Every structure is written in structure tokens, then in C-alpha cells.
Image (cartoon, rainbow, N blue to C red):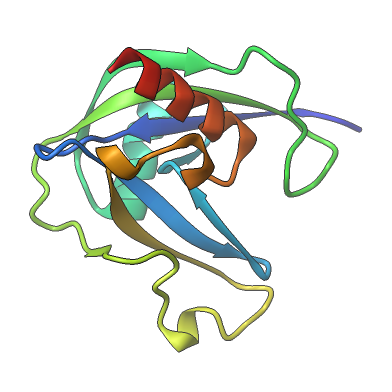
Length: 152
């Protein structure tokens, strides 16, 4: 039975106007996406994003303005049954000291990708001048990047 899958993602820009992205290895696939994840039952979207950022990056963040909510049909890339609804907010870190980032895409340690059914995640910054829709893997993220580039 098809379901709605609500996802909440954050746009974190640093002082140099670089965007934080998540490079992930999921079930043998490599994807670049914006940090965030799935809304849990009983959770608000802003609380979800705060939780996801803490779990994934270790950062305490303040959730800023709403940027975008999916306004077109998008099937899940992972189960092909669920319809994805993604909600995007600006995210402001309370401090960036503890964030561990990589400098190149998909810079995983060998053990992080040794299990083809496993999952791993690393973070990196993309320079604003180099950022484009095709920097992202997921279709809704591509739309958000186009909106950001047009607005800023």
C-alpha cells in the first residue's frame, strides 16, 4: 500500500557561503543530498530537523526560515511505493567546531563501503560558485538548489 514519506532537510551555509552536503553510500548507491531525514510520528518538522542534524552531524542547530515544500509528485528513490514530500529550512549552527568534513566527494574509508547493503555518510562543503542543481542526486534537492541560486 503506497504511503506518504515526509522528509525534512536543512540548508546550512557557512561564513564563506559554502553549502553543507551529505555524501552517502546506501545499499550500493552513492548519493549527494542535503542533510536531514525522515519525520517521525508525533514530531514537528522543525523538531525533526533539529534531531536529524544532531544525530547526523553532532551539531546543535537553530531552524530558520522555511524555503520550500515539494509541490510536485515524486516517488521514493528507495522503495518505489511511497510518495516523497520534502520540506526545506535554513539551518543556523550554534557552533561548527565539532563538524568533521571531507574535501572531495564520496571520500569514504574502505570499511565504510565494504558491505554493499550497508549505509555510510560523510559531509563536505560545496563552494557557492561551484554549486549547481547537478551537484545533488535527488530530484527535489535539485529543485531547491535552483531556487537558492536564483534567489541569492
